[in-house]
Amino acid sequence: MSNVDFQQLVDQQYAPLYRFALALAKSEADAADLTQQTFFLWALKGDQLRDRSKAKAWLFTTLYHEFLSRRRHDVRFPRVELNDLPEEEMSTFPNVNAFDSATVLQALREVGEPYRAPLTLFYLEQFSYHEIADVLEVPIGTVMSRLSRGKALLRSRLAGRSREETFGNKIVGLQSNKMEKSHG
Amino acid sequence: MDNREAKFILGAYRPGGQDANDRRFVEALEQARRDSMLQRWFQDSIAFDTTMTDKLRAIEVPLDLRGSILTGVKVSRSLRSSKPLIKWAIAAVFFLSVILGSLVWRETRPAHLAGWQNEALGVISSLVRNESRFDIQSHKPAELVSWLHSNHAPVADKLPSNLDNLESLGCKTFSCHGVPVSVICFMRPDGGLLHLLTTNASPLSDRVFQAEAKFVQQGEWATATWREGERVYMLALEGSRDQLQSYLL
Image (cartoon, rainbow over the protein chains, first blue to last red):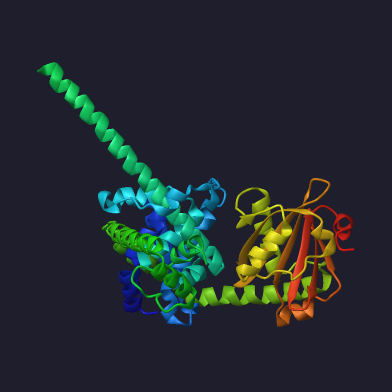
């Protein structure tokens, strides 16, 4: 692959790859390092990929493998099953517009990794469930299951933040009312 | 299809409408058209997903990342391309050593596991150590078999009779070198675990595996692998061949 082609690939994919990495990794530095490492691996092995149209999927798959190999002995994620979630959390939708991108990203990071990876590919790149299954190398049914559970968990996280903010504002409001009265 | 099933499927529907003609979604979309409650849920879901996409795409990327990638790869390439003759000479010597070594080793090695089997043992070990999770858990093997069938994973049409009586823990699907594999974990009466791996037979496995089980003891793992119809099975436990053999009678 020529330098020009490589530069084009970097220009097209480095931002979405970084955002994918950021949703998976613990810090911005880790995400940048994962992104960089993925392109290093492409520079080493990318020539082996005959079908150039699959370069994007190759990059996402490689980044995901890199992430998995780094965290293998790192973190154990808590088990959360679909049946553990109350029906109302499966059905209600918090107002995402009320949050900034950093808060939304934080909520996404709080969802267990098995759900976080497919969710990020779904949202960031609008990958189909077929493409997600290819990138993560899991069956289609598992992708659907993880998207369904992951979205329910994400909604639950965001709804929790929404309640915290509302509750927090009320306390602040009450305190400031008291302050005004005591000063008056 | 009830609304819960429809919600499960529609969770994978992309808000851009690219999936409208996908046969997997047709029935769920039809259900949403018929049921106003589900329709409202679906519209809220699409709005939620669209906003999530917008929010996540607005995350800023470090300004120096692009430059670091391009510079880093350029430096690596220049190092790799230096002294090409020495590099080729080293490669040729190494290549010859590998060929000679493998010829000697092939003649003298004990029975061994294939690459996918070693990889599969790694997956089992991570399950045992609780470093990875089951896709689904159940004490009833039949439920796991049914789940694997419905997810188009390789699975036995009927479990070996000695396993059918055991209580299961869960199952997991994964792929080894792009080949789908499933594993069901059972609890043995002595408190240990027993694992049944299933994968699809290939022209290569036709040559290597027959109907008669091939036993390999590797470290603490005892394994037995055999082929039956279109499937290759591997039974594995941490223990001896004798312990394993009692489940193959």
